[in-house]
Length: 190
Image 1 (cartoon, helix red, strand yellow):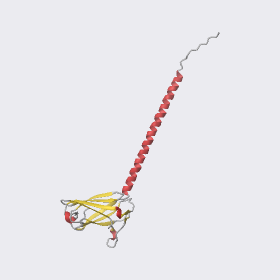
Image 2 (cartoon, helix red, strand yellow; image 1 turned 180 degrees about the vertical axis):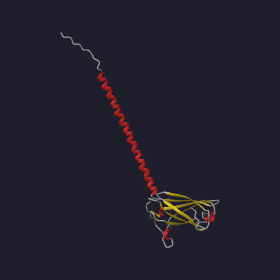
Image 3 (cartoon, helix red, strand yellow; image 1 turned 30 degrees about the horizontal axis):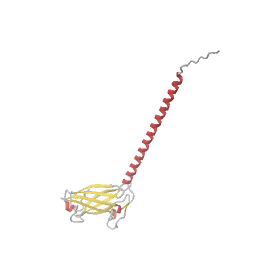
Image 4 (cartoon, one colour; image 1 turned 90 degrees about the horizontal axis):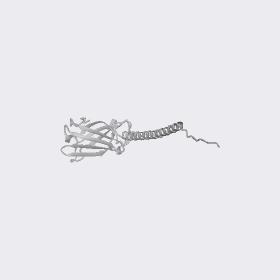
């Protein structure tokens, strides 16, 4: 009769191969997770940049730049302005102005831009309905429409100060302080 000897031999090469395979699979999984995180972060940053660019474009494409403001009469100011660079055509019924001052009492005034005229042809021009890019326009701001609300240079006098805003519906806003150093007609306040 033949005797079979079954002896177990320790094979370490197979154990090393399995360990290497486990490490390789772990590295592939870590790389997949890391690449997914990097791709998601990149997409989020791109979306945020696009949104910021769109918001900035919208605000700049509808904004008014003030060229100068002068005292027109004792009761009003003459505003000379244009649309900001990169602006679209802006309808005058979409633009409003606000004015506040303190002459011992807080005064608040506001109105629209419906009386806008072409600054180059003020004497013969009719009211403008749209502000075109690159063109200069003017508007007379009635600063004393009522006795109780008066931000005029005649009321505030020398060293008076007026806070002035221009708002474009769906666009940007412009802010300026008007300082009265001389209350006579034709004097600059910006």
